[in-house]
Amino acid sequence: MPSREAPADAADADLVARAAAGDREAFAGLYSRHQAAMYRFAFQMSGSAAAAEDIVHDVFVALMRNLARFDATRPLSPYLYGIARNVTRRRLRRERRLIALDESVGYAQRTGRDELSEQLEQRDHLRLLRQAIVALSPKHREVIVLCDLHKLSYERAAASIGCALGTVRSRLHRARALLAKQMKRARAPVERLSRTVGCAV
Amino acid sequence: MNTVDIDRVLTELDALAAEDQHQSAPPRVQARVMAEWDDRIAAAPSRALRWWNYAGLAALSAAVVLLAVGIRPTTRTNQVHTTGTSGSEIVLADGSRVEMRAQSELSLERATDGIRIRLARGSIIVHAASQRGGHLYVQTKDMTVSVVGTVFLVNAEEDGSRVAVIEGEVRVRHGDTAQRLGPGQQVLTGARF
Image 1 (cartoon, chains in turn blue, purple):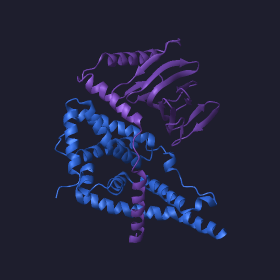
Image 2 (spheres, rainbow over the protein chains, first blue to last red; image 1 turned 135 degrees about the vertical axis):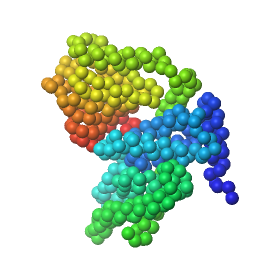
Image 3 (cartoon, chains in turn brown, cyan; image 1 turned 180 degrees about the horizontal axis):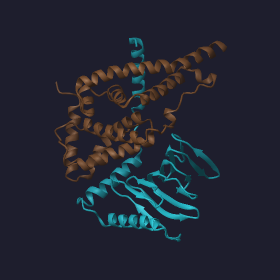
Image 4 (tube, rainbow over the protein chains, first blue to last red; image 1 turned 30 degrees about the horizontal axis):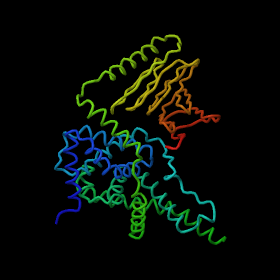
């Protein structure tokens, strides 16, 4: 049975061939098809919207420079994730001491009764989860982002990272356990506060 | 870690993936990328340096030499810009290093008590040498940063600026407010940030 990625890969191969021949619209087509995934990957890995914008830019400029050398029979998506991973790692190494202050990854604060609705509690958990993902080591973070957030198959994740399939499986197992442990610790004060405020009310 | 905790985190990861699924890069990123295409591919497939690269290098050399020989302040400024995907590094006479990212533009000039870098657009990382009595300033259209000995990043865009400190301390003035930033802290202005 053909994979569900096959038609998308064929469309990419056509666009890559045309872009390599200098077709501007084809390159714009490649950008449109893949920019959102690259942006989400960069944002989820770095926790910074400003960094994510720069990373997307650098990924597509790298693609532009390597169009002629890219083997169009290979799927494009793992190749782009691979570039995004390298660009993100380089950038994070350089700015490793910066603290992301984006609203979306800010610390969860529970300050009033109005925030005790289930919906807001869920949002707090997601904010805590973002923080916990960014706090993982790069090798654990990337498997969580690729496999659990971007839903890549193990094969594609391995191709993106450049490692064996078994490595992806074992890293993912370990990363999920670490994340669950961090989340359990992070949720504890929030849930305790919920219970306390619930009692007071 | 028990399977209940892992199942719970997997459910939350699914919720996070759903929340993020409509996120995408703002249109200005596409504009930057396609401008790069026009610049690199369509206009000049040759990898040879074009005249403005030489002009940029000449301006850079002139700026470094001018500061290195300690020429007195004049009203003239020295403009440097980077194109394409590669950045540049400028070494000032006091030993400070300025890393320019691609697509950045700055000018160097003497201030009354030191050197002023005016960042018109793009990003720089400044490795400021210890200043002996003087100051090194970095100015964007809406912020001024003054430093003593530190490493920090400045990003200037049409709609705002960002200063992030990696080592040491900087003083940032934005309108009527001034504040000190330490390592790991940053200040953002404008809608983009």
